[in-house]
Image (cartoon, rainbow, N blue to C red; front, side):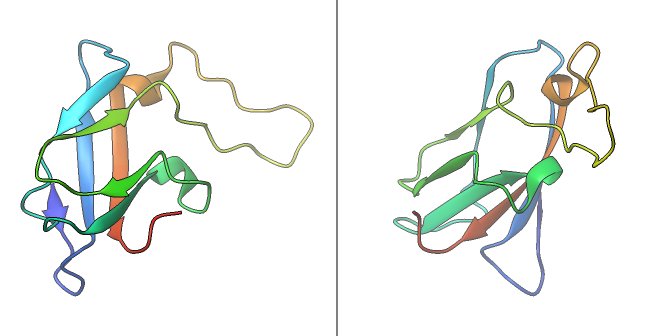
Length: 100
């Protein structure tokens, strides 16, 4: 996890999910304070709806690895993920703010 030096409530989290779990538990104590609101986006969809939102309560946050949508081109054929590489390796952006 690397915290943004200009915004204390923003960080990047890289997950290596070698066991291909559907959900991964992440400790965000170094980024968020109790009871701060947060949003977690996949780097594949920074402008899509967040994968996770909530008020941080000090416990680990569960990030779903199987709900990541791959970006799609504007051509005829969409992008297919053979073997779901985004489930094995994910990059996420945590931001603070009002949760919807």
